[in-house]
Image (cartoon, rainbow, N blue to C red; front, side):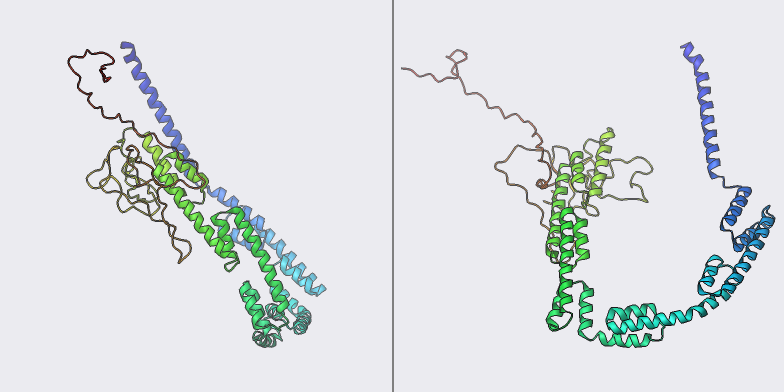
Length: 461
């Protein structure tokens, strides 16, 4: 006892010194992180940036920010050198006097004093070439007399000499069979192309319309094969986005609804099991599922409930009560770790009308062997449909029972949902053992001795 008392002040002092050293190191680290660059470092960075750009405006900006900087003389000398180089380059362009020479000068010295003069001279030299190119394009558009060629001409020469004539010709062509064919082709719909063929059976563009229909059909089939290979929301959604009027549109919408129904049944199964393995199986088989994140939160809360052994063992009953989120953190914890008073939702943004347990003045929930006061519904509502006007899949009905089984612990649902199509077979939980009630033995005559065969009926000859 005495030895222990003699070592206590020394160990306490060592611990105090260790705390002080740790605090000092942490303070030094925070100070170093919070300290910004020094004025000398800022000056060096500004000069490095000006030297990297290497133009008179960049050196002027450095001189304006650091009028007394040590590199101001260097900036002034370099500015004079660049201005002299610009003057010599412009003199060379003037001597050459070509469109390419002025274009190269403008590209090399966009900040130069002679840039505007060089650009004006370049435009004068380029005018004959541009006039010739416009005449060539206009002659080609007139010879082809197609809507696409006139549109390309207006894109290249919107203010050209023949721009108004091109617009007038376009207005006429849009009212002909060529305009109807272009509209049907740009719609990308075989229905529109078929309508054009019926409206203009003698048109010269009927062959083009049929060829376009074949190409659309091939692209449609290829996109549908990719959607079938993926067999997911994304695959069918991409197909419907690319071909909203495709020949496989009905099948794609039906496949999406089937995936939603499978996802819904798989989530009901996982929620009814309410075990980590069930939620992990759901997340593995349905990474695109509507309740993928909710399953993750539920796994986290199940693990949390098992770690905190000081909680009430019945806290898991009624976990589908409301789930509220604070400013990026979980609510109802008041700065502490999560407690049994907050639970994740069974469905994101939904709450059953009659939650089992944990209601009213019964914060502890229903005991494991009891039954909820308000029985829950037979199944939660299906998620909203992706397609307007189409009904949601009905909740799956429970499988029929051949004979009533022994009593089992209360479930979150009034009837267990069927397992998902691709899920593993449900593991049957063992029913609680209950011994049959013992009945009293029949009365025995006092005259018979208590023998092992006393219960056998005696027959007299």
